[in-house]
Image 1: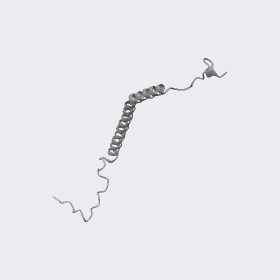
Image 2: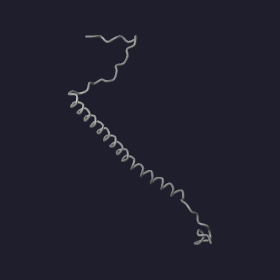
Image 3: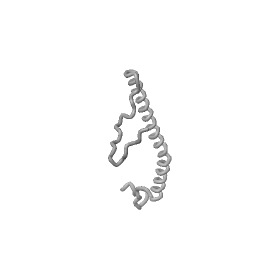
Image 4: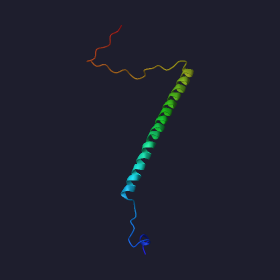
Amino acid sequence: MNRSTINSGEPRRVGLSRIEAVVIAGMLAVVVALIGPAVWQARQSTRQIGARNTLRWMGVAMSQYEMIHGSLPQGGSSPSPQRTKASPPAAQP
């Protein structure tokens, strides 16, 4: 005898009803809505910690450079943009 027909003569349906599926989907939506901001905040905190560490190591590098060379490095290491014939030179004071 089949296990689903032990209690009654009719076969018993196995699975979820539509109402149960909707309730489960609603519960999952609530859980995601509650957990989402916490996950976002944790990611933001991780980014901030990474930025602080980067700035810290830049400060350490600058300090070591100053100790070795006796001065801080010059700023503006990127080359200035090339002037074209269309743009006039800047006025000299």
